[in-house]
Image (cartoon, rainbow, N blue to C red; front, top):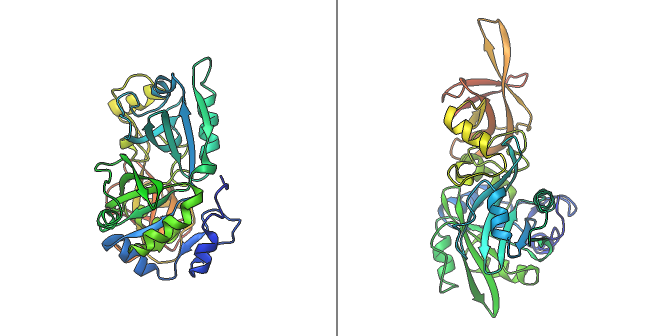
Length: 356
């Protein structure tokens, strides 16, 4: 886990009364004490999350574009400066090695990774680098993003900046009290407009304070997990990894079937043509509100065999305000993915009912 910026806003959160894990644990901000209120802000107003633990890999050099185009699962060549996409580096067997956001800049590309991803992604790219003019840099130490989300996010930023990105994955550089801030519109987070704001570690506290003063409600991991579980959006390192194909993890936005060859492309294309994925990430409602540990098996009784069958596994849990109950994400085997299908959670007695 990358920990360069782990303490960047910790004192600010502590002074503001946030519920925190110990300073040396990853993703320390759990909540600001009112989870229902923070969820309401995320779905009806504007909420801000500390993402300063995200990683950043910069790719530069005259061969950077061609290098990434032949490796990554989504397009690189057509991406214009100031735009980007969600992208993947796959294994040779077509499974997800890394999941990240790509942005093209004037002098190369920025790859924004979930916490803990930058060093591994850089190493994964470097193993395919031979004599090309490409420079790979772990720039996580200079990267300190935060995420603004909710239906009022756009209006809130319009009160600060003259220009905002109009499409997902577009980036605009704006001025805030003489400092340059990068504003990137990211894919809807829980169904609402979302923006990643980043001006570097030096102004992170000032930027956070300004956005909060403008009306965004601070929040943490509890609400962000609720939003992504409700949206069936897997998280790299928890729901997404080298044991799944992109189609199994619902990552269709992050790969392209018509761009030509890339690592794992043949397998991904074959799955698209012939089907055959054995499992899929699904949302399931839980019969109780107690947390369900990742790794809990999803069991069904097979009357013909007169035995319990292991048909899936839980990867994430959150309390869902939409369902008014616990909800999990989990991989469910094919032929058992119909909405309403009921599974026993591990040894029981709790149950999970497939939602989507």
